[in-house]
Amino acid sequence: MRDLETLVAEPTADFALLDSGHGRKLERCGPWRFIRPEPQAMWAPAADDWQADGEFVGGSDEEGGGRWRLSDAVPPAWPIEQAGVHLHAQCTPFRHLGFFPDMAPHWARLAALPEGSEVLNLFGYTGVASLVAANAGCRVVHVDASKKAVEQARANAQLSGLADKPIRWITEDARKFVAREVRRGRRYDAILLDPPKFGRGPEGEVWDLTDHLPTLLADCTKLLDADSRVLILTTYAIRLSAIALDGLLSPLVTSLPGHVRAGEMTIREERRGTLLPTAIFARWSAGG
Image (cartoon, rainbow, N blue to C red; front, side):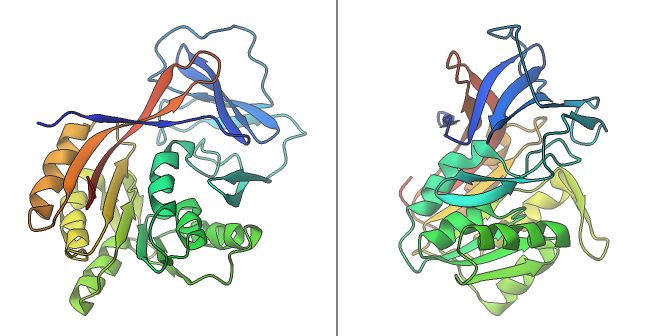
């Protein structure tokens, strides 16, 4: 087994992990501060004087319920900038903020793709990765099963001044879309997939990560060839391991040049530099 890699998302002007500990994290998102649950923050926080404009309370994970308690001053959404594109941040019912800041190292890889690259973004959510790729001059296919998420992604494209870029917005089950692309003989230079643990497609299709990811990932690798550059798989299913993702992806790309790396995604805490682990990834890339 090769050494695992640690990816670090650094603080930015519009987002920072300010402090973490005792199962929670304090974040700055635009002009607002929020407290959210974080089971992996098992240490003591740097300070006890947390002041926030909102807190998500209850629920041990994304499927565990809970709700926001927000100051009246917090708007339904507000504009921020990440990785050179603009988006609407918001306090979602699933405790998210409308984007995943720990994806920054992956966004950087997309931003470095050659102009004209073909990019497939599966489970694209509110579209930050799609917009970063489009801003770099890539042609993008953005797929998500949620019509609302695709609408939010299109709104973010408008906010970023990228509405006229070559982005195909597709509301469909990822497995169905990829299987059809394989039958069509399509290829991509870059594929990013960030599947949830559980979900449903627009026609009620059931998604279960451990049951369905192997087939989906195998189909994704059929959309790559010797001239492709990167495939990035991320998951927030913390009961899996990066070693498992490595073992899943590596046998699928033996015919391609390049290497597979796997590891943890983290965010650097602003106050003391502590790395908060958030997700795991596996990445095939032509350059390693």
